[in-house]
Image (cartoon, rainbow, N blue to C red; front, side):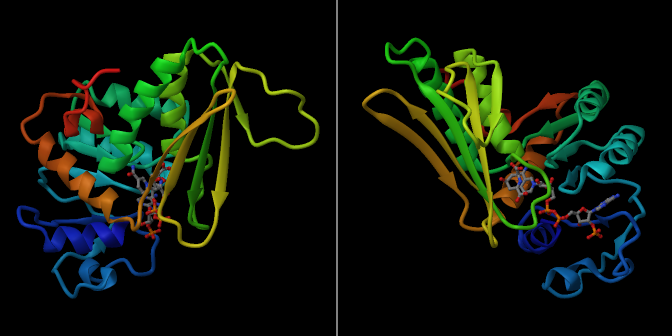
Length: 256
Ligand SMILES: NC(=O)C1=CN([C@@H]2O[C@H](COP(=O)(O)OP(=O)(O)OC[C@H]3O[C@@H](n4cnc5c(N)ncnc54)[C@H](OP(=O)(O)O)[C@@H]3O)[C@@H](O)[C@H]2O)C=CC1
Ligand SMILES: O=C(O)C1=N[C@H](C(=O)O)C[C@H](O)C1
């Protein structure tokens, strides 16, 4: 994602890429971030050094980087767009605490299509809550072979929307052996890892006699970078608080 943020950010009107931060352990540190991203020299080295001033920080990295990132943003008063997934509960809490000091947009997916599908999922789950045949919900996700966390943050976010609307209290991650008939009180998660898949999610509502599937798929990763830029622009002038992409995209007023 770092490469796409640099490449698209450099090309976009209204965005100045002023820093490209990593741990400092990468042997490419010191090289130009634009050159590394394939768009030529932009005069910004890959570095562990933080700049003095920015309008917003965009983070797509690893949970190991999160604690230091939060501390730097809070200490410097930098607004934050936070996209990394696979956090611990303690890190989730630390982000909520940091949002009392700085404005943060945090979302498991920055994609417009995914966030709109979240709204559709909320509507479907609410409508099917008391369906006479019962409605079984299973969430299928596909990502590239390099993805480290599973299920995806987005799959978990879809599951949270469903359980808040329908009340399931158990997560079932895959099935094997002889688990017996499916209990109604669970949401099933199935994570596929193949090739270079940029991200695909299907929410299955299985009734007796008919099935609804909501499917959303990226065709490349640029939708996540573009969403992050939209979030960064939206943060300008915002008060401290924890926001999400539903806020950025104005989807909160569309109710189930
Ligand atoms: N919310 C969303 O819309 C999306 C979220 N994601 C999430 O973003 C994250 C990154 O995904 P992706 O780009 O594919 O992963 P990569 O593994 O390709 O990139 C991880 C990046 O983190 C950097 N990094 C590693 N350790 C540190 C550290 N200690 N401090 C600072 N930077 C560090 C790496 O730098 P180096 O190479 O120098 O080690 C690298 O640039 C994942 O959690 C993924 O799930 C991904 C796409 C969309
Ligand atoms: O690692 C990825 O690639 C992605 N991660 C995010 C997630 O875990 O949901 C978002 C997107 O699906 C791509």
